[in-house]
Length: 117
Image (cartoon, rainbow, N blue to C red; front, side, top):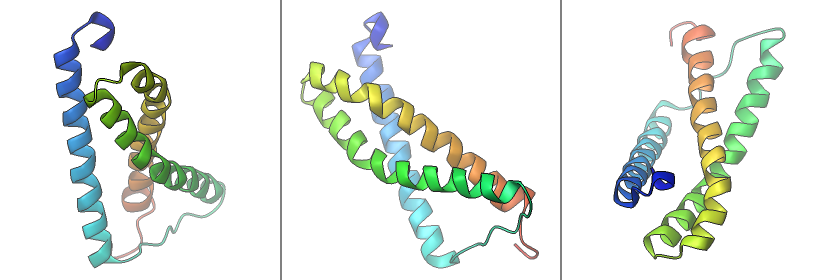
């Protein structure tokens, strides 16, 4: 949207994406505070693959929080050059965290779900 100069639409879309991310993070933390830990039961080649994905997802999920806040504050503050510079890093990291989060969830709760989960 921003490349086609639809600034208002870009702003609304980014605020909606940020809001959804905040809602997800709050619900995720709340769920895990009550449900506890679920252990991965997969064996063989999938085990190191799962833990590699989980590890990179976790590290980058921590990194994306300040990146998203800085990117958002620069954009809302009208500081577009620094906003653009950090957004080039924020977007691909945010996408990676989003996709790998779904992959981790599917592997943990649907493909290799522990008995009774």
